[in-house]
Image (cartoon, rainbow, N blue to C red):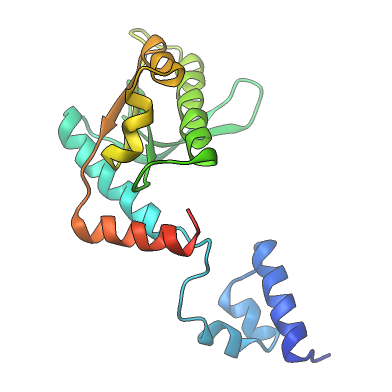
Length: 187
């Protein structure tokens, strides 16, 4: 087996991370156990905090809406493929997307919320049920929701297409974890 130097190992480790071959056993087979065990801090793009926040937000959303939600729902598309939503009821009468961000959104984050809203609108058309599915865009911070509650075109579009904007208050530890992750991720 060919051994590569430490710089080469770091490059190879990053390449394997990018293409999805980043499991521990794969790294051990390639002699990169030190790289695996030495990385005690999460990668800058790691989204564990956002996933945990989404789970907490969905639990709170269930209580607020009075429905049982299933997290990560996949809907088959008419021409093949699937559409994945953050949560939905089992009968698809309520479809949800969650944006776990703390603070005012900037640039691409505003576009992410717009994409989530568009995804919900499309999902409702695919589900094609009577009465139409309720669409819920859940945000986890009042400052993050502010641009979508004002009188701008995006706020008006959400109302026009019957996308309900719900703000869920997260626990203090979760809010702090998201804020720390955003700093790490430069968001």
